[in-house]
Image (cartoon, rainbow, N blue to C red; front, side, top):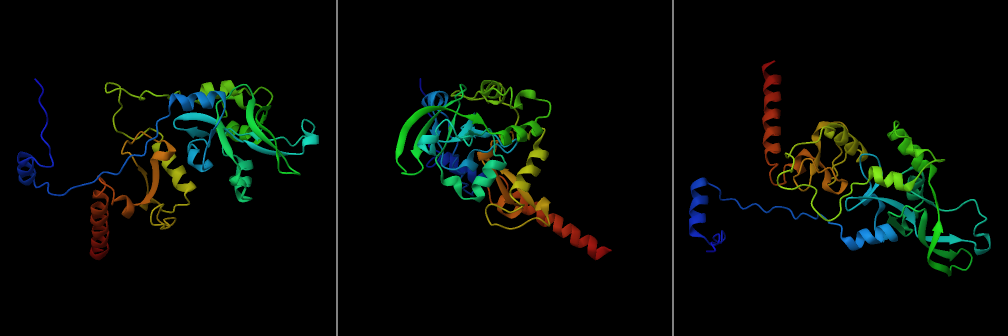
Length: 287
């Protein structure tokens, strides 16, 4: 026998129960824009490349490496301008990037993020590129497999971040070692089952990560643009999906306490702030 739950939008029993509980407010939860990587995308990453729109949407806040839908990826420019007669002779070849290094910072300052950046997981040092004649601006080759070297500034940055890891030495660096060690290995299935789902608690390094993310935002609220540099505790890092241990960069939002209190489940922030302010004013008055 099949038994269905009542339609809670029309059920008189449900309406009566809500009235008895005093639960008269209707709260709309925010839509969760959680992208799940497909097997097709995995195949493209491992054999070719995938286009991305904005480099900064894929920067991991912990170490500056690049993530695409849960996968650790390598970043490079696909459309490469070269003088055809100098191919294979020039020392200024394009490099692939492991993280948001000083080279990419310089590229951003120079307004060169308009280049066609793509991400990949190829580990053979061969990358699909389009070669364009710098003089005529005409395509010389498309989707051509070319060898590329790793960016030394990326290795230097990651070597400082992981001082006990020796894989970031230029002379011995191996892409396969990097991806095997630092990839999330998250493909299609959920990370946790109902039995293994961790408690909805902050990770052990949350205070360090929260501070780093607020520093990167220059202590400015992403919603109202209020500068909290003089009151850093009034700026929070919000988990968009409500899962406290999900520290994916796309799941984190920097908000002042006022903006944070407007999200479902965080209305108490405004009340706590009011109580604290009243208490401080009372202490000042009594003293």
